[in-house]
Image 1: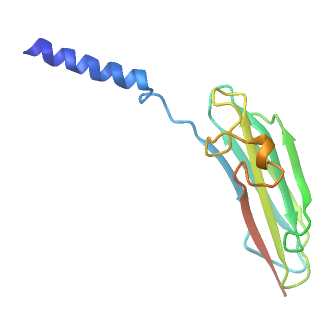
Image 2: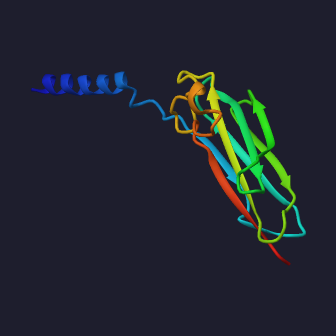
Length: 149
């Protein structure tokens, strides 16, 4: 009976190894670190961070923009390519008029790893379908309200 138990244990262990359950999960991230409000007479500092720990993978693209007119027009903060496994992009923004809102959007594409071109969730990027429309990869958004003094 002991031999059968060891055989079963060996089969289970082999199955776990074969399905990759013992491998570590890949972590990718994309964050906008910005305040939710600012004063009308001060600049605001923010950072955008993207990273991956996948073997051979890097932040292939990081694109960040802002709008002060409700998203009708967008101005580039950065467009970085092949930035390594981690990139931290600082930025300074001037306020609009009191009561206005600065909208931020950021997206990253991770490439070079076993998964191919993926977003921060690990989903395949559909370059031809929706990259231009800011739908894929998933976009991160933030808003900063401009307050009066």
